[in-house]
Amino acid sequence: METAVLWVLSVVLIVLGLAGTVLPMLPGALLVWGGILLGAWIDDFTRVSVASVLVISALGLLAWVLDYAAGLMGAQKAGASKLALLGAAVGTVAGLFMGLIGVLFMPLVGAAVGEYLAQKDQKRAAKVGLATWVGIMVGLLAKVVLAFVMVGIFVAAYLI
Image 1 (cartoon, one colour):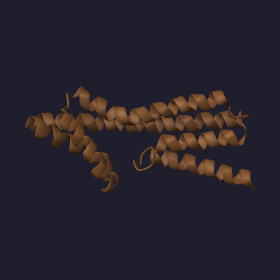
Image 2 (cartoon, rainbow, N blue to C red):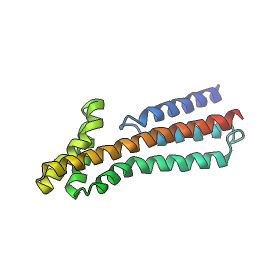
Image 3 (cartoon, rainbow, N blue to C red):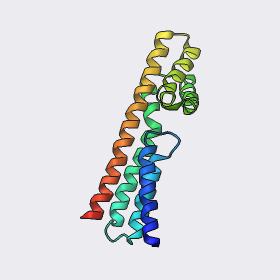
Image 4 (cartoon, rainbow, N blue to C red):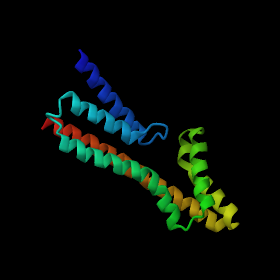
């Protein structure tokens, strides 16, 4: 019975992690990784080898880094000021309290407002806000893809 409970916990962690790749309040890649690690451990790394877990761990780390770096890279590519980066961070936090629309668009608003305060140029502020948003969306897409690849490697290793 104990093994069944552990498997349920493993699956719950993976499912919550997949949801967390798009819901910012959940650490998506970390939960997916934890569920996979638990699943591999339950079976004493017999079906899912340590090597597979290491590959999955590297993908999880990459997903985590991309989550934070993509928005910054988009902002930097547009030449964002420090106030724009701060605005994007504030917008991200504020967006958490506004539902999915807030989560998706408040970083754009925050970056644009921050850039406008720094440069007093509406066109530049809009460009920086959009570039930051595109970076965040690319990072989100990459994080989702990497999470599913992690799960795919786990399932394939377990079944083969």
